[in-house]
Length: 195
Image 1 (cartoon, rainbow, N blue to C red):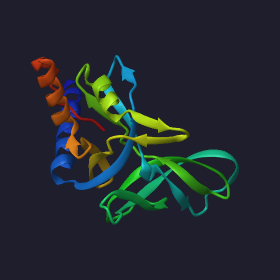
Image 2: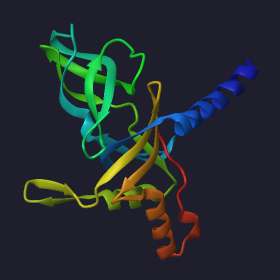
Image 3: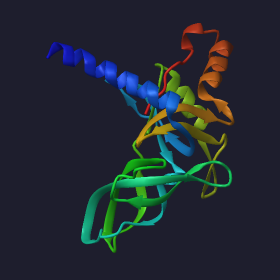
């Protein structure tokens, strides 16, 4: 039992590293918020443009709101960003896919899904800086993100890991290093990611 308890975390780390080295790269446009979790560390919660759309799931209909999961088949648009091409109930045998959660009502149409990689972990103190970099600006009733952002996500056999968060075309880690250099605090340099 003790060996199993030691082997499980090691296997999980090896599997995450395998996804990072062998997984296909997908870019997901983001819109983050910044909660803090004292037990898990500091992170930004990412939501993605790809989570909104119009899909149908065969056989899924109910007169009440019902929670479901399915496999989202991924593609890329003309700009190279990921989008969900369709939802399938059966696990695909090929191509890029991830499991998503969603709610249906009535005809089974789906307009919003939750991708399984929403948290990007950062070093303590970097969440607030990241949130500031990603803070949207309001112009009347319109919200606009000043620096466009996207997550670089590696996907392999339905498993996903966020490799990096790009803000204004640069890695958030580089931006945080620049911020630390400007503030004169060498310990404020970030180094972690998330999923």
